[in-house]
Length: 372
Ligand SMILES: Nc1nc2c(ncn2[C@@H]2O[C@H](COP(=O)(O)OP(=O)(O)OP(=O)(O)O)[C@@H](O)[C@H]2O)c(=O)[nH]1
Ligand SMILES: [Mg+2]
Image (tube, rainbow, N blue to C red; front, side):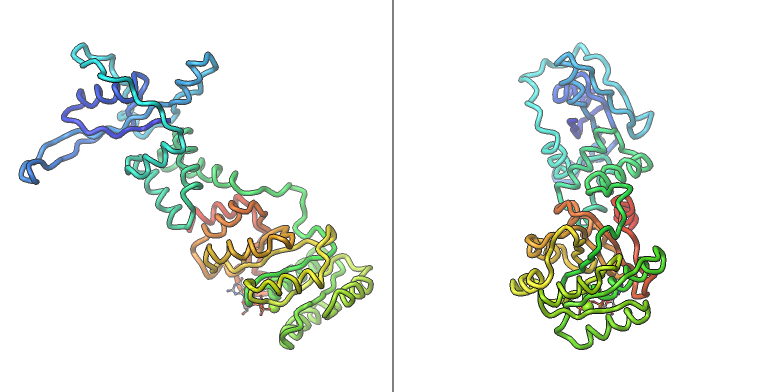
């Protein structure tokens, strides 16, 4: 896909320029009259501004004798879509051959910087940027939308939803959210680990009628043990406090008849290497453990990115993002998942236990990004 904005004195002149720059298969997407100031702003002149595209893939495939891709199916306004007329006899001969075609992604990027995308695409690009999505994701979206000819608002929404959803790792449909015997939540201080573990445990015990137990390795604050004990008592579930790997192995033996054991960990400054070591010293991260990195949705992108990097040697099966009720910027979460390709487990949206938790899905997250 190649796109050009041409400003000329007349439609005829614009047509000649489009033909010279894009070739005879170019299609006009949009044309409007603009007023340009000349002579240091003293004189106004009416000109035409035309946006034209050439479906380059179509050209290349046709050239190679392959089935050509369909031309752009949807264009802005019916009356604005004009196939270029045959070359007028007075057209000057092209002085030099058309420039070689840039790669599509580079092309989209250049067009964005030159500010000549159709208005609805400019608006959607800005919205995604405001949400915190980076150039690479936005380029991919623009490229996909242009390739599908989605330049009208209603068409954009559907296609964009699909494009964004496809960038996130999908869960298999039969994959239960709580799939292992041991479920461990870790992350930085105050992220909402204990509250979320109580929500998950309560849902598993009440809705799925599973036999559940708790382990905590958070021995730094007396209040932390008390907090989890309160939830355990409410759910009539046992709790073991583990200070070491030996304690942990003993607790595993004690709970061998239980369906799911929810493990709470201490919130620590994730920048400290020692924290990661303590975590892996006590908990054996093997296949029987489903691990969730818990991060607050209100955290900055760079901090989240650093946190994921810090935990790269602890296997992270899925993410949990808490406090989504406290932010309107879901794009940061989207970006982190797209970067890391780690699946989204849950989102929590309030302090109520157990209600304020949702299973995360790529489509739901995409919709949240586009709605906010
Ligand atoms: N608004 C909002 N608050 C939440 C959510 N989840 C947890 N909180 C609140 O965040 C605060 C910290 O929650 P905790 O569960 O104690 O966090 P933690 O990660 O266990 O904290 P440490 O163990 O000290 O590291 C509490 O006031 C929770 O009620 C949420 O989804 N939305
Ligand atoms: Mg806690």
